[in-house]
Image (cartoon, rainbow, N blue to C red; front, side):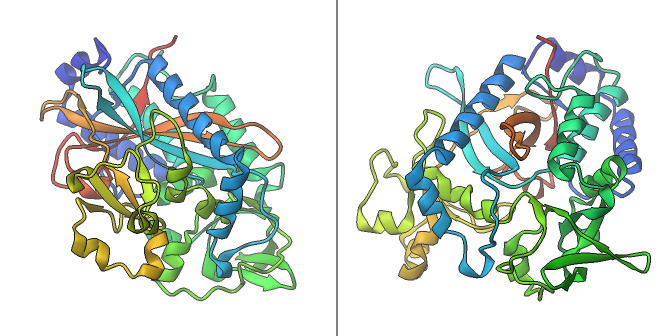
Length: 404
């Protein structure tokens, strides 16, 4: 988008430089990057990134400051996973925007979804830096948000994840972490913060305390950086060594309840020009809250509230698709106005769509802080990297901005 950066990058791009980028990423992450890395970073004006950061923060506070929403969202946490000692606010927020066009051609961001769950904070910082270093881009380009720089970014990330605990007593908790595509991100926390990555099935529970095995010892856990998603626990029928309902003597960086409380479930409660119309499927059947929802099914999406990586999303759902969902489960689905992304990134393979994720950190007792962004480039219906495997100049990318 931003000139002259876009044209200059395209003109000087070489496959050799891209292969060098991939090799550097693998080396720094101590593993092979399994998902597709886009050939190009994205060049966005700082004003756009500030606008997105402010909008995402406004939407987050709109939810947390709404007593009716907070009461409703508490009920959406499944009883068997409702954990006590919930933090008063989520430590992590991600807000995804698609870039769309108004009828007059001007660009306008539209909310795709928001989630109170960590994203790849470590990996994104490395990726942005490597785009600049590998391609010899302008070193003045920035990728942190909210006035942060490389040093203050990791200081804030350390504050949120460690909360002043000894790194040995803080773990990153995941399901089968060695086989997750986000393993590169995990390795960066290990290297930068000194914490261990632990498989959730290997935890040891003694009384109301948790421990993890390390070099023949049982190490007490004081704080958990939670990356385990309940969807995957259910899908894989994993038996845990503890119960989510147990009154455990441990702190959570990313309390599990927030994964449910701020999610796709939030969309019908938001009121903002950037938010597409959305209704719960049971409301749609009852004829409630339909004002502004497109009648054309081609302009609608059917989304399960709790899924991961785009699983279960249906475009232009038919009557058969909707009727196939049992009436008792209709409250677990959304009908949402489809966001039509504008192809705004000029590449040698044609204009490409961009989805921008603003990633926030919220330290205990502190304020919500935009920290960094993530960009997905795609030319298909879905923007996730898994849905663009057969294309070039698509995949995970980073947003770079010139200094203000």
